[in-house]
Length: 171
Image (cartoon, rainbow, N blue to C red; front, side, top):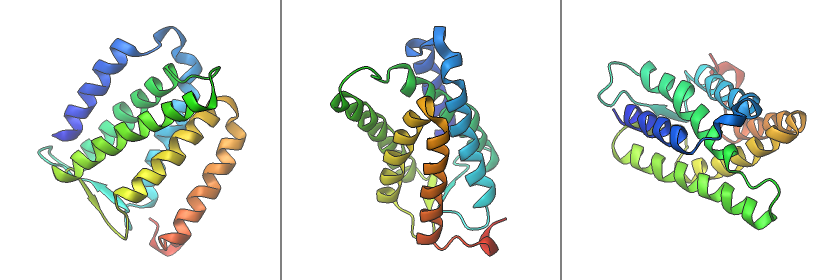
């Protein structure tokens, strides 16, 4: 049920604060984030770092779909809608950390409410680090997508090694 509530909140926030006139500029990065999330769900289905739990919804697939179709696209849309591209590095870092903080608070609440469970050594600290890298790469993807793809592959490779995600454990 938490995933449904979060989805409604992301819809309301995007409706009110999204840069709808320029949504098409953000579309490639929105797809990048959603596809990345889908890849995690498929590749790590047999060896997950975290799982979205049904928590009142009929099955585990529904919260995943809500995240991939609603939560991730709209959060990236909002993130890029207000990213201070032409401002100081300090303001840019503050924007990244604002969204990291939002994601960490939502994840912490989700864990406490039983909507997310951790596995195979993952925890909120790893999620925080992941979110810092993710939002930095999303910003980079918006302006230099090739470089962002390379950095993403390197980061995912490092995480795979650190968490012993071998080809035999992938689906």
